[in-house]
Structures are given as structure tokens and as C-alpha cells.
Amino acid sequence: MTRETGPWPGIDAHRGPEPVTVPLDTPVGGRGAVMLWVRLEQPIVNGPGVEAENETILELTGLAKLNIWWNAAYAGIDWKTEAGPDISVEVPGLPGPQWLHLCYTWDAAAGRSQGYINGTPVTIPGTQADSWDAPDVAEITVHASRWAVADLVVADRCLRRADVLDAVPGIYRGALDALLGAKELGPLQPDQWRGDLLFEYALAKPDEVDGWRMEGTGAVEFHDGWMRMKSTSPDAPPGHGHLVHWCDRDVPADFLLEFEVRILTDDGLNIIFFCAKGRDGRDLLDPSLDKRSGVFNQYTIGDIDCYHTSYFAGSGRTTTNLRKNHGFQLVATGPVGIRAGDRAVHRVALLKTGGDIRLGVDGCCILDWHDAGDHYGPVLGNGKIGLRQMKPTVAEYRNLRVSQIIRKSAAENV
Image (cartoon, rainbow, N blue to C red; front, side):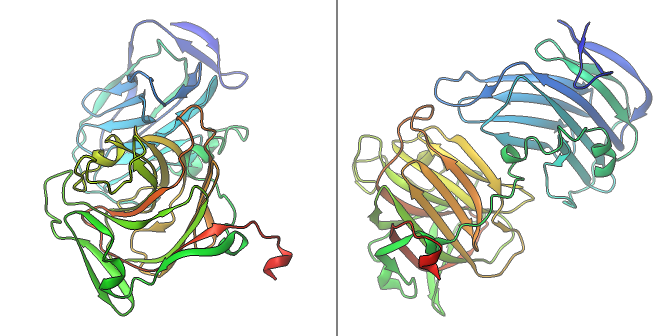
């Protein structure tokens, strides 16, 4: 391997055309940690025409591999284990040239694992899994042909976050928080944007949604002023049993969508589809479009264009994601709006003005992205909105309203 300048003075980096296997001073197995720096020599981006690639950075044979990968839809960093839980981060891309500090630590008997990028946790702290068997490994193989690797540390104990932060200088700490969905985005106050009402649904009784279309194995019930949605096939095979409920009215290119929601289960995912039309401009509910049955790729790589964003995510997920379709392209991430186990009533607001898209929950902005209309294709305009749930989720909705946009000053809101 050749020697190069590392992430800060006094730290050398190494690069070589062939993998190098080195013995460990102390074997790792049931408990352990791996820390290292990786230099990305150029930006990694997703988007139309991007070829899929997957690069292994290092591996503990029989225990885990660390990979960086990308394709047209998104990029990611994976800690893939043989028997335990994987730690995966999905982002629109990765900046370069730049050094990244990566750390993965685990306690197999306790069912705990965590990953850190530049000191930021990438799964919800305290997330538990089932215990797993982890073999003792006495050597590590490093692949450093594409990117330089520096300051590799392998420990036979589970590290605390404080231990990780000690290895990350201040100039690097939190540098990727915006990409990782860990950056606070400030307030989103709908009353500053709410203009004339275009349409509304109280969602209190069945006849209000007579014109709506349910796709997939979904059912609706009405009680106490709420519309409850759930799957009638929660035990369906993978990929099936999900549902999308489409509103029968179009929203304009610029709009404010608001509704209240209450999540009654811990697992699954809630999504809003918006600006949805057939790829050739046909109405989303046109019967000449391909039949849709709740299977996700019918909406993401089928014959429609749309944006979609999550606002509730179960199973320890740490990000709210915004994607642009056709193509399932991840374009922005932010903090999760509603976490698993939260049974409170929440106010969701989705604001689109031109290419600016913002999503808020209870007055806090959790997504803020500008679609420039170039890299991911033209900015999408008017179209349908749809409420999607994965099959484990039961949720209730009320007071859905769509308004025109009028930017108001603070004085006008007093």
C-alpha cells in the first residue's frame, strides 16, 4: 500500500490496488467495534443514468462487511452482518473529495448495535434486536483501491458515543447531519402560507370519500370523527398487502396540504404521494393507466410521475425521506416526524411552492428541498394526492384540507 496524507496532521492514510489482510492483536466476536476514516475522492450522486456500483471497504470474515454503494435511486453505506442486524444508511449522495469517519459497534448477546458517521448515530439510540451468535475473528481485510483508508481501530468491546466522538475532530463532527436526517430544520407554520381554501374533507363519514379510490387491500372505517385506514391482508407475502387511498380532487402546482393523523400501531410506514399524474400527462385515476394494487414499485417505477414523502416510520428508522418518481430517486432526508409508539394526534403540513417542498409535523419542519428541475427531471406540477400505509400500520385521519398559497408577513399573523 502507498502512504498518503490523512484526515488531519499526523495521521497517515493508505491505499493499495489489492486487498490487505492483517492479524488483530485481540480477536473480536460477541462484542466489538471497528473505527476508520475513508476518503471519498469525488462526489457520489444518484439520478437518471447512474450505473450501480458496490465497493467493499473492509471485512471481518464470517462476521461483517462494510460497503459503500450507489445507483440511480440512492447511495448508501452498509454494515452487513452474517447473523445480526444490518446497519444501513440511505442518502441522495455523498460529498467528495472528503474524509468520512465511520464506526460500527455491537454487543451480540445484548442485541445491541450502532453505527456512527462523523460521530452522528445512524440508528435510534437504545434500539434493541434479538441476540445473535457472532464468531471470533482474528484478522481483518481492508480494501483500499478506490479510496484511501486511515487510522483503522478494531476493539474487542462495545464503544460508547463519547468514545467515538473522541476520535472525531470538531471540524468533522456533524458535517453530514443534513444528509443523515439529523439536522434540525426550524419551524414550519402553515398559517404563514395558508390562502383561500380549495377543498376540504372532514373525513368523518363514508360519503365524504365516495369519489376516492382505494388501491391494494385497504379498508376504511369511520368513528368519532376519524377515518381509520388499515390493511385487510396484514399477513400477505412481502411486497403485498399495502394500500394507497387517492383523493379524487387535483391539487394545483402550488398548494398547502394539511391534515391530522393518529398512528395506532408501532410498525410500518406512512407516506404522502403528491403531484401524481400519468407519465404522459393523463389523470392519475385514468383507467387506461396500468392497474395498481398497492405494490410499491407500481408507484415508484410504474407509468406515473409523482413525489412521495414519509412522515411516520417504525422499526428504528431515523429519517424522513423525500423521493421523486418515476425512478424512486431519493432527493432529501430529514428527522422523523412521528416515531413508533407515539399515539398522540399530530398535525401534518405539506407545502409546495414552485420547486420548493417543505414538510412539517406539529409546526416543526422535517423536510426542506428545492427541486431545480434539472438533475432529477422537470419540476412536477398539478396532480393527485394519496395516503399510503404499509400493511402493519393502522392510522386515523381527519380534517384534510388543501389551500392556495399566500405568503403572509409575521405582522399579518398577529
